[in-house]
Length: 365
Image 1 (cartoon, rainbow, N blue to C red):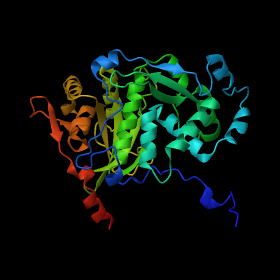
Image 2 (spheres, rainbow, N blue to C red; image 1 turned 90 degrees about the vertical axis):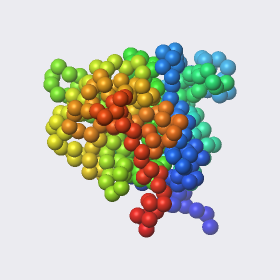
Image 3 (cartoon, rainbow, N blue to C red; image 1 turned 90 degrees about the horizontal axis):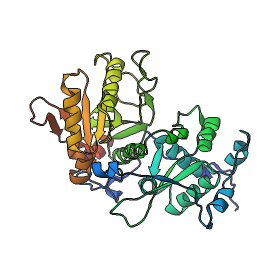
Image 4 (cartoon, rainbow, N blue to C red; image 1 turned 180 degrees about the horizontal axis):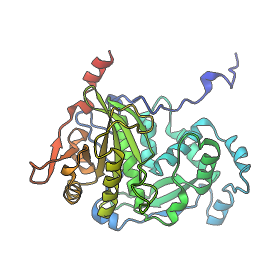
């Protein structure tokens, strides 16, 4: 019997934000003993200072840039989007939105996403989707080099047309980063965006993950401030047993000005009413306590932020998550608190609960 192509069972079902569908024991890039893994976003200070990334306009099968660009779809009016969306399947749209949500995504991180959901994605299908999205001018390709790799690293972002396409059809779902900003912001901001993907993909794999979002605007305290101060990642997670927290992340670069983080603190203090209200809604996440989290590549930078911002004096909880510790010792050992009792000003928190799959299974049972 011929299957009806409009059958409900044939529709692509994207992974849900609110449930951890990954079995940590089957995740090949995470050490199940402590949550240790390689982070594609982890750069040394010297690598950050020398970082360069460039647009790549070439499609497979073309030798000259002119020929490649000539075969990228051009848009004249908004109605052209109506034709293009009919050429895309639901999986194509998933990857377009995924790239849009995280702003800039390394190809390795896209491959990892396919591994996180092996029942939904395959590498061959994602390759077809990326080629199609590029051919229709909805994403941009970028290249950069790292000394320890023998080949160029590929990166994807929304194109300006891709941004308009998502605004045209899906503006009710969420807001997206305007790609025209890539002409004005520092290239190194790509690294900040990759940090966000790494954090998400690690915490998504943990048995106590509850959901995520990728846009939260803290607003401004007064008219003299810039209008927007946004967190690129918010994750609901059972950080300690029987209590779900909403972790609101601000990823750090080693070249950042301290003024950026002062701005975050001022606005978070306003948002939490000087720490008196930690339960305000963070999008639609399920946590019952909000925690500000600074992600830093190194313990040294975490310590500098702690000292320069005097984090211990604030009345709301602040955590620091350190990428180099994740890569060396695992997520179980990578969270820190500000502390007056420590010579470094930081107190390491050991959280075996994060990867305790046995306890999770018992609770679910």
